[in-house]
Length: 352
Image 1: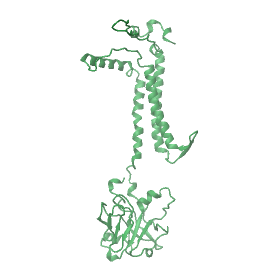
Image 2 (image 1 turned 90 degrees about the horizontal axis):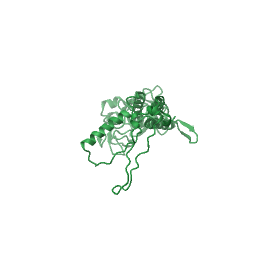
Image 3 (image 1 turned 180 degrees about the vertical axis):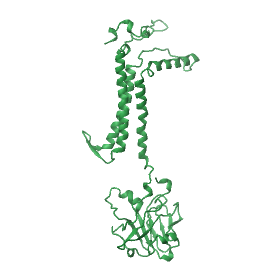
Image 4 (image 1 turned 90 degrees about the vertical axis):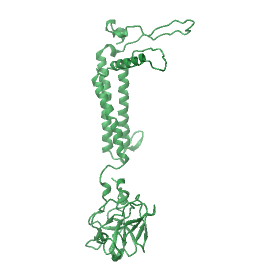
């Protein structure tokens, strides 16, 4: 159905007026103003049923956008980051990246498509010619602008088409949640994962180099031995994350050389166990001075006294190294008697 088939009395009254003034060329204006062509009415302008169909189509697009945004959040939460999926003709791609891209793309596209369909079928499409005016805005022009804005708001039918308005607001409100969810990748969630390590009561202490459990006689006076928890293997997927928290160094001192009471109580026959992770920026400590019982971080020269609770005696480290309480099991192997009592690594505000 076209506007030519609609009786004149059914056409909108504001559309019956002349459309654009036409001027004649003369000496002062050599170029005639042809005016605007006659306005052709859309089917939605003259048939409310067609307008309702357009309204439902726009609402459907906005609803699809809301569902796609919910799908984006669900995919981010449920799909593992390392899961592949075969997509023809792309081949094997990350299932998470593909799902996030598709859902976010659909959410944004359907908002745009709904807005375009709304503007083309329901908003006013009457062509308006206006004379150019100076840059400054006199009061009457300001009044006209506000009046035009009010008329545009009325012609958009935002107040009348409540289904479109509500679904559009829902789609626009949900889409920003995609960006909020992505903020999760900026860092770990506020949990207590970094407060705990693999060390626990009864966990054997294993030599880092030989991968064998240690006995007290394996740690000699003046030696520095690096260790890890029993059961942590380099082939494990979480090895790097776990060893970054659980890396241990063992030093055997003469019991009479240990000046800190708690350190002595937590040791076994002079063997003390401290975190290998420097409390400055997390570098692995690897240098030991046998005569002074000092350990040195090679990154920024933070120095800790292992005979006095591993307190900081030099450098930028903020607090002593955490000590692990140790003992021996029934078979004579060194074991942990619990986890570290304080978080290992750098200053507390850098940890979750």
